[in-house]
Image (tube, rainbow, N blue to C red; front, side, top):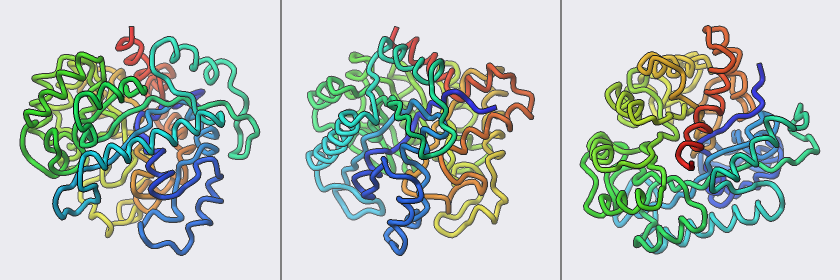
Length: 366
């Protein structure tokens, strides 16, 4: 069964457009051909996300990120020398989203009324999108999120971001940050992180628990009483890395009514993946593996209402770090048949594809 709509809750669209110089309006073939011979990233010529492929797979709604780190010392990951520079980078990314709105590719979703107006364009009246070059250009809805809050120089900057449509925020990314500690790091949120949570709660911004290290996760869950989701996180029981949630964390998220978006990064899907050394063929990795992560959360929850899609595709990697049977974001639609074969009912499958996160937003924005 091909879904009428996929809601992908984590795509770094502007980051790819600006940092990797990818015009997301191009076809996948054109993007890949342009990058032949480029060696600055293993994902060059292996990209999977562009507007034509999103439409071909009926990915008509997404959470799209802004991303800029502050790295005040020599570190493994790139970043900026000041939060002010990081802020300027996110504003450039925001400008790209505005340009994509102006040319009819995207439409921003900020509230429940806009969400409810957008959904029928895909669920009820979507034209046939049988190939990536379909002429119909139904706008793709996007909800603005910030991955890592280093660029929030002051709480006034957070208010400005909210006015610009920011509706979800993950306080940290990798390592130490201004507001707390992220993946591969240890420690609780900082005092500024506690202030950030208070302002997020006041404004009604969703807390994205993805990338919080264990201590910062529990600190945030204790202090923050607003809406929580996890945009792109899998199960540590099936991929033993602190980037994933252990069962106690998953249970805590479920108890808060959260939905967890399933990611397609191979390092987040299997035990023992060696970054930049392993290959999907080493594990026989296919899309079916994601069903195991979905099953695991559904078993903990006792239902299928707390899991969705947050692919993180083209999040700094390409097909070299993905299931072998996924060549583009359009192939995520094949999850429907895989879940049906495991006994999931049609309404549960639609819930995974879009319904669970849509319900979350409707409740949050009520």
